[in-house]
Length: 113
Image (cartoon, rainbow, N blue to C red):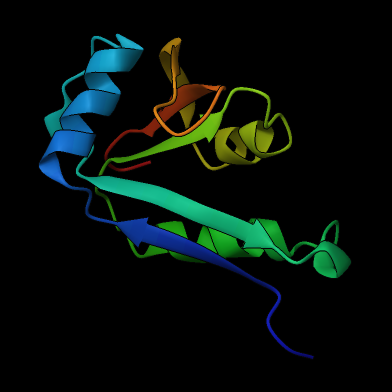
């Protein structure tokens, strides 16, 4: 069967964490979101079979009741509804990525969600 995909729950570097909340102008306290959900990827032949949803659910379960944030490319409209299904809300405004010519969005899931 092989690998279907990968996802990660991270403790971000302080400078990155602060920058995301500042650049997005979310107005939220970054201290309420100590963990970052990231690196969701599902192999093309496994997409639309529930693997992405399963990876998100199982990865976020590791956060317990901690607040979690995620950043996604603005044009990545396939993942946005998946995050909303898991209790995330978009916060703030799109901001320019330092790693390419695209904008990023901040999504947050509050403690206890």
